[in-house]
Length: 572
Image (cartoon, rainbow, N blue to C red; front, side, top):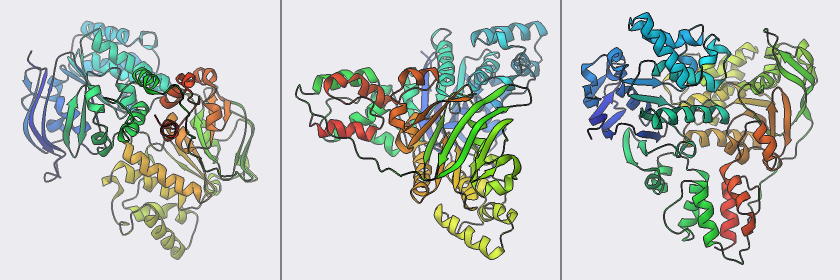
């Protein structure tokens, strides 16, 4: 069959940067009805490749393009984005960046109205699209009152209303909790398998996308390194790691064992295959090795205390309910829970951005009700999920100096602090660089440094690794861990169970505005039923260890290095 997408010799550079190619010699064919996943480090060209499929590249972004992109028989360079929108729908990472209507139905209608379609056609397509994504019951609701997963389904419905043959999704689940991710991925799978829509999806989490993908394309250095079935792609684990890709837990475990000749055959891509292989190769007299000892920081005195803290937004809906909490000096805490559980609301109480409508929050002896945010900011720093929401200065040095100047530091002290911060984040000598032209990792580090320069005792970070590739996430987390080891108290809001397991010493799990679980990560991940009620999944390595207890493997192992050590130490 003729492929629905045929890309030949595609090279592209953005307007104003014509000498810097972001796509280099891309050759790719996609078959009708295929589910293709694309993964790669930040800056590898994934999003640009997506934009080439619906004509945004080159029509909207300009620049220099060579080669050809043929979509459903149409050369994208000879058709407008409006024409191509009826062949290719696109959904971005942030659903909120695509929402334009006051209600769900208005949002789905908007694109069709721009095509000047008859009213009866618009209504029929709107109803069909909302029914497909199971959002008909919400058609009169404001999109802004929906959960993250529901917003993303509305964005998909708006794209489906054009009746495209191809749906392109750029990291559509990056900002969602596990339940929201599952909702969106199942919706996408339904469109692919039951309706025959061709899917092209960019996703950094191979572990989540493997059950759905027919093929995976790995990109690096603006090129496609490999495109094949998930099994054949993941068997090239070394190549993927060099390309900044995080392997699924089970694949990483098998890869580490294979390097020592302890894993037979191809690397696994799923839990069941891994379990069966290990049960087959584990000797009857297997004696597991000991997990790696994790260094512990002994917590000090309480820095933040919440006493029966409650909070209602202006609509009267209660978000926090009688929260009692102590955060001690030197702790590294993961704040978890589904979208809407109250995580960000609670975090904003820790530095006075929000004040409890009942109860108290005490920060180093100061009641947040009676202290200004500026005074509290010197004690508790807050870093937003998106660094672009807090970076606004024309260069890095001015961005770092902004907070200290508002605190009335003298210029000599400010200059010394700025230079130290630049050195700490590996940007010595780059104070005059413009942050908006830097990569995601550098912008996130600048945002963190702009808060840390004010020398807070506590650092609160909202999803510091979301949207980042594995290499970027590692760089950010290593920096944060270094700060923690020097005595900084850290609170991270995250949906990433692997991050919580590997880095934090304590987990706080919120459910419907109250703290449902609180304790060391190992103890919290042992509460499987309660976690399920809070819509939190176990790390894949934990699922594996629980299923291998009858083989002598300790249950509730939460870190991949520990599992590898247990298996290697037992001499397979």
